[in-house]
Length: 260
Image 1 (tube, rainbow, N blue to C red):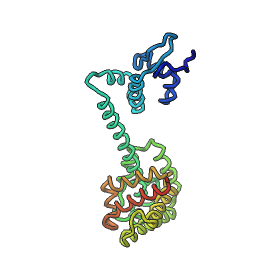
Image 2 (cartoon, rainbow, N blue to C red):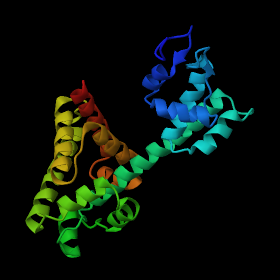
Image 3 (tube, rainbow, N blue to C red):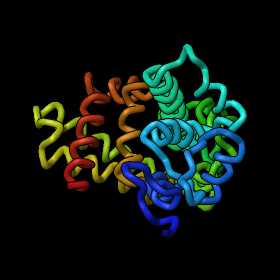
Image 4 (cartoon, rainbow, N blue to C red):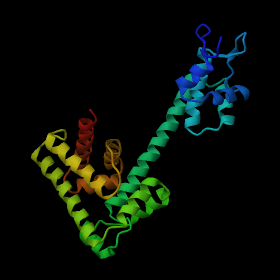
């Protein structure tokens, strides 16, 4: 009999490794340190029961969340913590990570919206192109928090190549896209209309072309920031009441259209 055989309803170490996306060596290590200890068959093979698999599910999630092994064992062995409590803790940790990533997207895009990524414009020229509300606050905030990320480096690298004519073109294109949204919301076009989705696609292409690679999933995250961050919301709603929500919904509708 080989280690690939099945004993009743238990699974072999190879089957468990494939199911959970871990290596056999990792499972052996978990056994050695007492984290996941399957029972042994008469032939000495490891066999994992349903209880072992449930425990391993929690281990895998905690590891992906960055918990060290020496903390996971006590968490799982706490008699006052049940499965529901583990799931709630894990969910909270994941939500925190999502919030951090949304903050990253927001910080980068606020900096990009402000056109402060290494451009050669003077402060007066920046205000001339991008309005009196222009501020370098967004760029400083983004650089302090995310200056060591690939997304930030990509945006800085691209923007660093642009001269004054490029920035004027970028500002004109951005204003044109926003104007399309304003005209549509004033005309009463639904955000999931073809015209609104086309405007959302133009918005995505504008950001993708000039600043950083912007897929549909990340575009959704950017749209969410237009509502979550009052500074973004005000920028759009100053152009037309409710415009931030309209742009958000159009972006999501466009992403749905392209991801079908």
